[in-house]
Length: 98
Image (cartoon, rainbow, N blue to C red; front, side, top):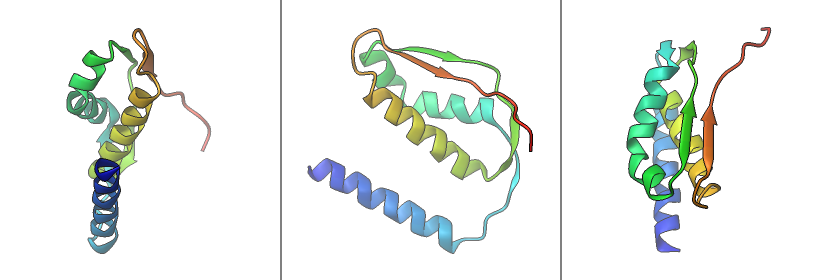
């Protein structure tokens, strides 16, 4: 319970920092971002014996830090719901209009 509260407070602090500092957008290579997120969660992925499949991802326009956090949160959530041995996480993108 205390660990979860600490995580929630950390997320709130990050959100406040993001909202109070100017944001510079640029091209962000999602392959690099996912690599960073996977590296941060590597031990958890191995411990849960999760198979990870990552397809080629696009370059998008945005804020590198925010997109990195987003993929980190998505990966963290996917790990939580794949704790059973032999789980699978796939990361891929598909183009859509507009």
